[in-house]
Length: 93
Image (cartoon, rainbow, N blue to C red):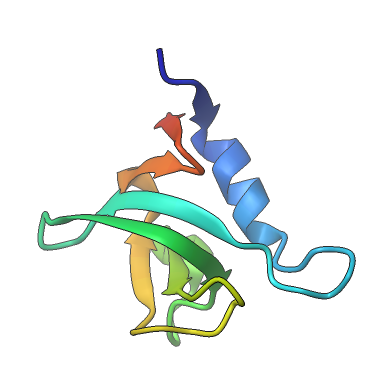
């Protein structure tokens, strides 16, 4: 059985951008895009989602990265209601 985490806990985790040593907090995430495609990003960090108000539009920016935290590809604006997994934990509402 897969363990679970609440959406509120996921958002709280994503709001903490750095570890105490100043390095980025990396995580894995699975989500559904606005086009309906399921994405799995094995290593990413939270960032801004463009110029939009993240709270108002209910989005979070997710930047894929390599194992050292260097960005790879582009930022995905992720709808908080469409996050399926966070660090291999199933997200519950």
